[in-house]
Amino acid sequence: MLWENVQNILDDKSMTIYRLSRETGINENTLYSYSRGISEPSFKNMAKIADALDVSLDIFREEVRK
Image (tube, rainbow, N blue to C red):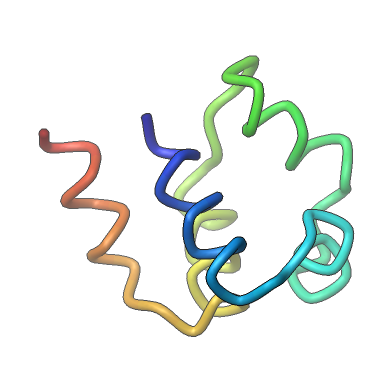
C-alpha cells in the first residue's frame, strides 16, 4: 500500500501527520483519509508529500508498480 511507504518515512523522520499537514498545506483530515485507504492522493499532493519528506517522488511510483 502506498501509504505504508509514506508512514515508514514519517516514522524514520519522527514526523507526525499533523506536521506533514502543516508543511504540505494538505488538510490533516485528507492525510488521515489517505492513511486509512479511504482515498488516494492526487499526483499534486504526492509531490507535496515527497517534497515535505525530502524524498524523490519516484520512491512512491515504484511502490505503485509492485
